[in-house]
Image (cartoon, rainbow, N blue to C red; front, side):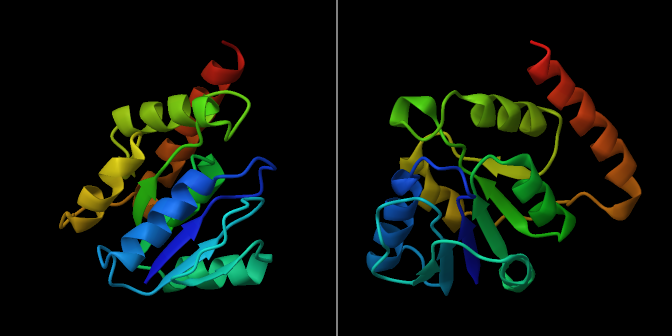
Length: 162
């Protein structure tokens, strides 16, 4: 199962939702898919979806999924990594009017460069080929959580403080 979540930011993330819907329709995705669409205006036609999920529903889909495709919100992809899920991050981008700036893109790139096992999608047209890859990833284990939290805090501080 693939769980797609775009978070709760008030700008639509139709670019990701349309691409997932297209990949399902074209049978590039053959798994069950559930999408949390947030404030997006596009409504998927080829899978189950909901605008928002409560805490328990979010945890249910995160736990059930083999793959999590998400926006670049650190809490979301950190949760997926902590659950040892294949984590594909598609940051919201300012040029598509999905966020007020490119902080998700900048942060996700830094996390990836630090060696954390996220698959970063900066071009939505690459999503199909990334999904088709047979990825064997070493996920962040409990023994690395303290290091991850420390580095994560430092990265956030660097971004906030310029």
